[in-house]
Length: 326
Image 1 (cartoon, one colour):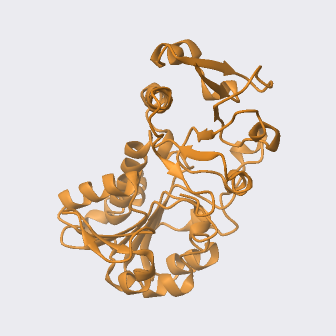
Image 2: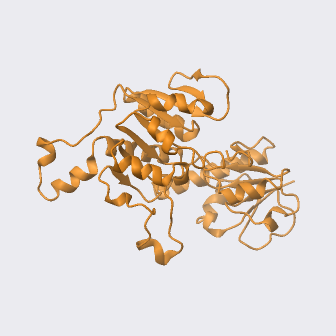
Image 3: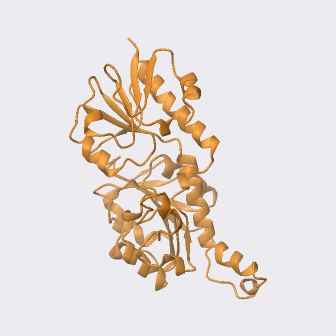
């Protein structure tokens, strides 16, 4: 019997014919917001509705990106018989963005570039505060696909790498990072010259890094967030940057987003003026979207591989627990 797959929105598959060519012959694909005819085995949708989750025969939902929306997690928790999965196709792009932000902050690349464009060479003779990463300690919160990629690069920069993950109860060393249970966070923060956040936003991680946690970091530490903005307390982060406790921050995720297309050119990303601080590098949540057609091809290939796995009767990878958010 064919595996019935419904993709809830045409925007998920901008090249449907290319995608069909990647699928095994035993997959029947339907596309669009209309209710598909007959039972559906797998729904591909980032924000499914209650009506879509009630489709006959539905046994799995695949969110076609990494960070599962909170409303999707809450809704899927009401349908325990439906498995939830996501895609990790953009782990390389997001890890590279985190690295780019870290290097830009540690060497003050953006403000120095801005001055030299005005023919001002002052930073060469009066260097601003900056950090050499070699020999320092990095702490990665979230040791999933993105965190593991990032750890390998940081080790290549001769950094000591620590990490936390929710699973596990004792520390373990995988040859790249020493990985601790999440409960060890308070003990790890004072060791971290660089704090990198690659966590999903869940009830457990919302506000995980507040004023207390930022104060535990050594003075002059760097924070990079490519997870979700509200994982770090907005006001506490601004104060730690403005008063100099943090050397700087690279932020690809925020607290406020445009409500519509008209707002894309005039929506501040925060209630606080991060844009006035020279020690912050701002990026409009594009870390996982870099690569253009190449990244889109990666997404289609990753999704097709998951569906082909299901068509062969094998377990789907990237299972997400709706109650935990990852």
